Image (cartoon, rainbow, N blue to C red; front, side, top):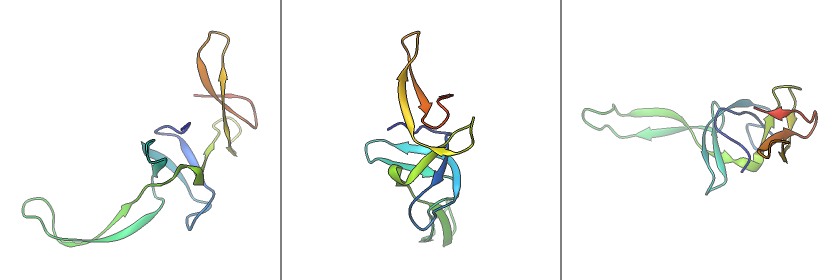
Length: 103
């Protein structure tokens, strides 16, 4: 998985298509990411003494990683990511549109 925490992504599929946000958590074994403000649902919760009050809370659920695209910081567009080996021998993520190194 080429997506990392704190990457800005754009949702390209699903009911939240067109929304963008920052990745807060990555689940590589399940191929899912948790994005701020995307895929929010309402959950009814029971009261737990000393911890929380009963009620309806809004929470974010993970979304499949193939339903989001990274937004390049250089060109500002949603793009695919390529892996490239740099001159010094390290691997880097590269924007496929503008060919700039990401991070």
